[in-house]
Image 1 (cartoon, rainbow over the protein chains, first blue to last red):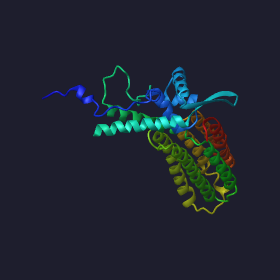
Image 2: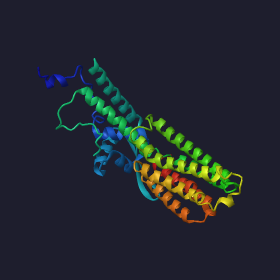
Image 3: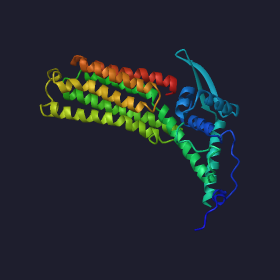
Image 4: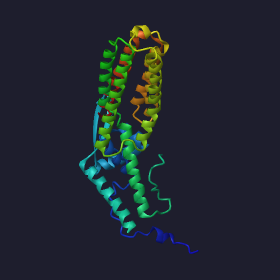
Length: 111
Length: 221
């Protein structure tokens, strides 16, 4: 029985699109997806939903903020500081484009 | 770390691009569904449910027969469920994700058994206490009936149990509200029968309004 080459099995049929490096990262993709689905979401809720540590969420949320994909709002609720994140229009567009690229990859693989 | 994350660690063997793309899409979909289930408990919907429960309590207290009293609360249960379904569905629709998939389904499955027990017990009580003995006698006359006396406390406790169970997948305020329903139900079981509508108003009315406002302020409407 002939052995199949692993290289041949993973070789893409067509060039893989250039992914947005900000979005094409597991934690940031999760943050952006959660914000697009849930609207404005608090730091604590995001941390719980995504199962992240404070530091991990802060670092990746900052990168998304720097890219203009999320906005941050700080306020007080019942005298307790509350940090809320929300996906911006650019963030929603970036996620839409990423989804389109994923579908392109899948269509290309199907031939 | 949740097991439903896409496998993207560098140490792992290479995967075909389409398999990675499928995994990414699945990850995005699961994350969206989980987020909606987590934050979709409707704050303003809870306030509305509480408002209808307060109105129902005022109406139920004036009913002359046990049958009428049960009818008012059964109607309120339907109204409350409809308000909850509409407001949760509205938020999920706004996000463009199905509410009852993944964690959303877990939320429903956590809540449903306790509610079904409540419906079954109520139907049994209705059958034994109202249908078989006739529903025309005064409510005061049947308030001494043990099963009818227990209903308000059981309703509150069963609803609380369902909310605590389903709330494990939601914001912390939800299981806290469920625990207070359990407490209200336990107190109602020990209280005089005449206080039944007061406990139901405090639970289904007061707790829903108070926690609805808190949820709306902290987690969005």
